[in-house]
Every structure is written in structure tokens, then in C-alpha cells.
Length: 216
Image (cartoon, rainbow, N blue to C red; front, side, top):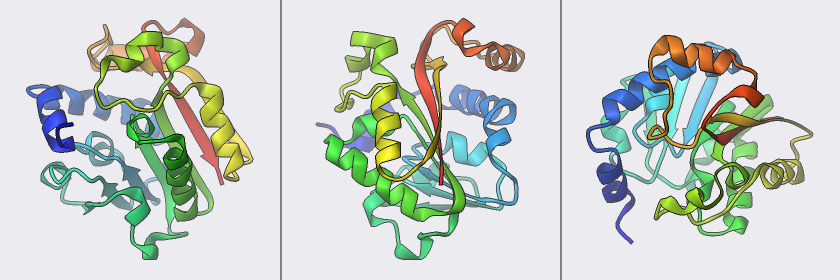
């Protein structure tokens, strides 16, 4: 298989500015409600840093094996070029929010999924949150496999169970949250994104991704 960097450079060629604009509006209209500006946030699988660059936080950390991540991180973002299992021990119990978007489906096995979730929980302070935005195979069916780097099939119940197994007693699960990709007929104008997120989840069209929030 091609390297991580090569796959994503090809997939997102010419689309990065649009992706950044959409993530800016997603952060403003939803994710910032879950995160205080005084908190430390770590984005695992940060990619091109669309989330971590646009969220307001006291300390921002991007984790990714893709060396391109460093090129796109904002000046206020610390980049760790490593797999989650290799995050330095000094961050353990020092993070308020761990965030991951479209990440778990790229891992090599469900055992690795569990390992990454355990690592994520170990990073959190007491009262911290793990926020996961994740394609849900129950919603998108065979389209889940349209991406060559998707290896693990996950649905809502499996992710919720995994979070509870590793010790998150309280898990928020929004099954119908966002479309699977930005190639969907997704409303990309800022006002339309705000209106989309204001809809009850059951009325949102084109959905393919679920949202999970585990409270430590």
C-alpha cells in the first residue's frame, strides 16, 4: 500500500482550503461547545490539522504518523509525529480532551482499536472527555469500503461497547451526526452548516458519521 502521506496528498489534492473552512464552521457551531478555551486538547490522527487549528484551547497538540502534519499545523499547535501508542509518557493524565476524527477505521485490527482507546483514556485528566467522529457502517453500508485505507468495520454499538469496556461509564452517542465525506451533498456554506447542525439528528440528510463522547 502507498504511504499514508501519498494516499492523503492524492485524496485531498485541491480540497484543503474548503476542508479548512468547513472545519472552522463545525468547530464554531458545535465542537467548541464541548471544549473550554482554557483546556488542553490532543487531536489523534490530526492529518492536515483542520480540527486542531480551528478549535480554541489553551494548549493544542496534534498527533499523526504522517510527516505532512507538521507543515499544516498552526504556530500554536505542538506536533507529535508518532503513533498513539508512542505518545510520550509526560502527557499521561494531562489532557482535558482527546479528539479523533475518521481514524479508528484505518487501524489494522480491533485489538489495535482497543489499544488506542485505552491509550486515549490514560491521557485524560479526571473529568476529561474522549470525542470520536467516526464513519458508521450501519449508515453507509458498502460505501464504507470505498476508501482503500479502511480496514476495520465499526458501527455505533461496537464503539459504545468498546468505550464502556475500557472504563468510560458515561458515553454520549449521536448516531446520525454528519455525512460520511465532504464529497457528499454536504451544506458547505457557513449558514447552511449552522442550520444542518441545528436540525434534530433524525432529520439530517446524507448522514454517514456518528459522534461519540466518553466522559472519564
